[in-house]
Image (tube, rainbow, N blue to C red; front, side):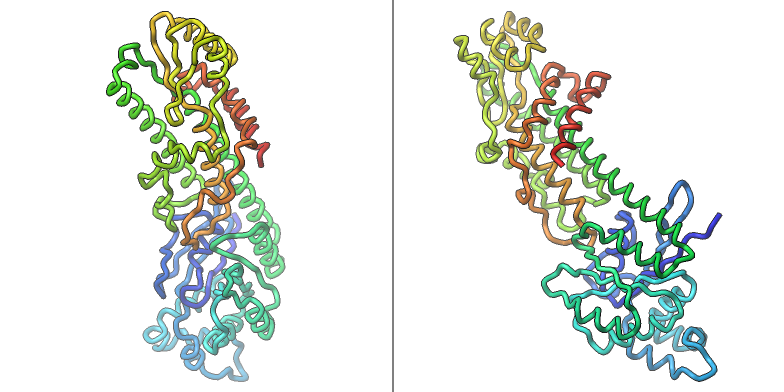
Length: 454
């Protein structure tokens, strides 16, 4: 079995090394990410496993805290030694064990790996200490790929850093942003590594293909999770007796319990989406999401939210009214199907494709009513979950800004095909939690509609 490709991730303190690794590997448990200088104190490793074998091993190293002092401690390069030999000679000194203990850990890692990712915070000015850092890393005898991090930040000094690196013959460079990774950045990074490590080209191609496959799988898993959530919500309903409907306090309590059940199901979807994208609930201000911090009800069932979604009451009300009796009563996102007369039951059944006609007729004869979600709520949930899915897919593990779910929300008109695909669930309350071949077929139809949106 081939040894995994060893890649040391090096750079000055707080350049975003651990965040870069979490973003590249989608391993949220790896290391500690913090704005405090010198968070990483030891060399840690994480493997990328493909088909049960470690294909690539990243080493996260401490920051170089005193590169100017380190360069002086290395001493002059004598005529009878190579730059790597000078590094090894320094590592045998007392200074490497005491004053430069952290820097020595980095240098030892560089001597034992295949290549290094030199992570640079492009927002930093090009100071003398960083010039020393580049000089030291370039003298370790290993291929070094500079990773220009945070290139999207307005304070980026990318051009200045690129010029400095070129002066040290580090012409191959990778642009990245551990806050908001851009399309193609990861592929470019691995393509650059293939140039530096031609003997490991095939293995690096496999790694790049595997990571792209993982990204596609995350996207598909997120869409399936959203489809399953919408299907469950569309199927959710509770039946009220005539007495429960006529007793205002009792009806209000049932409505509140129903809404709470809806909220719990939607919250679970948010947590599952975070898991799909390898984010913890407390990562990067994610705890502020309104559907996690207690403001869900105010957002989801607020009349403004429903109105802004661009949705209207379903056809059931209009059809029932046309027969002579209103089939639905709007309850801020909920429908209470009135089954007091046969005309109402027929109206409601017609609006849903006649699927639940038998059950509705039975309820009509006994004076029962059914509480369910309107399409307006399903629209809002679909909009928010799709926006969250897209935001997490484009989010790096160095991000610390709050996610705005209003940004990039799809217009309700684009969700009409999704709502049509959900309609069979209206006839199957058991689909709210259970499973069956017919539910799976409907789920596939909803998933296809979501995929078509993009």
